[in-house]
Length: 353
Image (cartoon, rainbow, N blue to C red; front, side, top):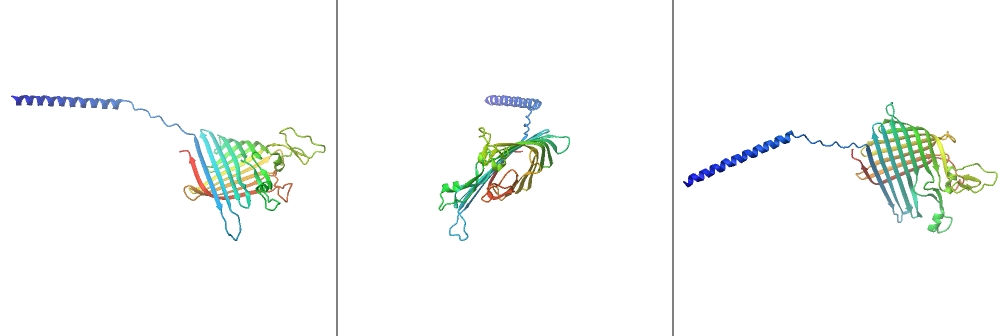
């Protein structure tokens, strides 16, 4: 009797378990069907980015120490930094490029116990371009601003025995400074981009100002307002200019002319890059045949992941600038040239494409 009862209970338990499993299977099938029938959730598309941004930094350091060195020389130390920041926008028919270059370096040598500046530049460029019906041609508006961080000098030798630090400072001759000069230009014209690495911008209508804030430097940058006066010259109004040797010099000069700017950025391989810019300007208002020339080149040679050798050159010809020295007190016009070779640390931050 007990055996029959046990078998009956076992049979009932089996039947219950089978029914529960069947119900669970049915529920799972219904859930799967409901999921399959449900509409798929739409994943929002990523927003397009119209900006391309990058910042390249370069820091160089050099130190020389001599002891019992027969060939001569002086202990010295130099430090320089360069920043090249770019922010470029492109959407539909509009392109807008912006570039800021900051360049600064100084040298300290035992033969002159003062800091000597070797590089100093603030240079900002902005160009807006709009498509034309002609391939690779754009209507353009080109803006630029150039000056420097601080004063720069010709470093003369004091005319005293055993000169002090102050004597060395007094022997310096001021050459340039912040907003002395500064160049501000805005040009309207055509931009041509035949290759991704080359751009030429011709602006036949270019207006701008040359600013020389320091009265002591206005003569050297051609800021003369009038010819020599026959009568006595009254004191100028505050901010109007400065008087020197019977001439009145102004703090700014307006220019209207034509400008051609050509930029090349050639990346030969992952380790070798050349940047070059040539700017030609003709002033319609005075001596338009005398072109102002600025030609800058910078060569980057990547030696390791974060180390680069850099060679840069700058050439300037401007017939309004007079170079003064001990032999030419009144100044003379000539080609200005500078080249710098550096080795240092380089790091680049760029937006993801």
